[in-house]
Image (tube, rainbow, N blue to C red; front, top):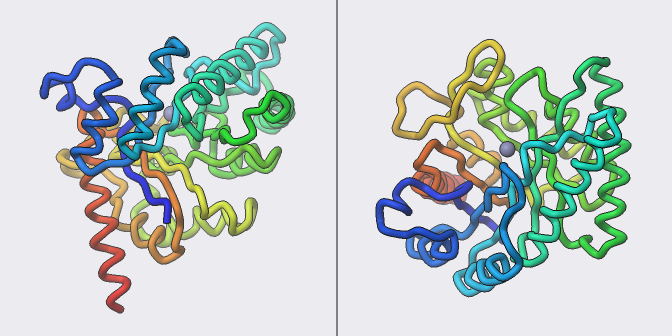
Length: 289
Ligand SMILES: [Zn+2]
């Protein structure tokens, strides 16, 4: 079973313990008992080939599964031709970096339609993602999944249904389900196991059972306002959901194979370990039943 836990980017502790380069990360994560790492390219894909290949080699030696978070500037729904080409270039660059480092997933934010209706924005995003994902397949990136993320603000494209819709465009697209975002956008809706079950039922109805073989998950406690996500919190902050136990039970009951990337503020590796422990406890308990 492929079950993985790891951080998005580098925890504060990583630097406090004297590490400087992301190249130190695979060894550091292995020591902590983690096996996934989402490399952050939010502000652009700036990693060179040599560093990326080195990171990939170290990750493979230490049993760390890599993914990449692509630039925040991606907007599949952009109507402007220039902006669309920029989006294409961000995605292709992220795929190239993923190829160098052996990452299997490129996560990205779908974008937003500025002026027109939500349906028109989604239609445009769907058609452009079809084009770009086809190009990825044609250029030999078929083993790297493109993963549109569920977003934490209503104003952005990326509700669960929109993401699932985008994922049905081509087989090299899978959802990146950010449960903190779903919690924020539903004003605290992810409070019971049933809410998590509903997400997976919906996923199964659109993408089929195969989707449970490789679920890409973002998880962290989140603070929100009426507009949605405000900031990421940590498991040490009191009063912020969602509770990972509900998700752990669902993943376990459905025998899902998955990667949980934790985005807790500054404690992303530590909280990834908290989640791993919860998952192990929950699974042991369910197995005893
Ligand atoms: Zn994201």
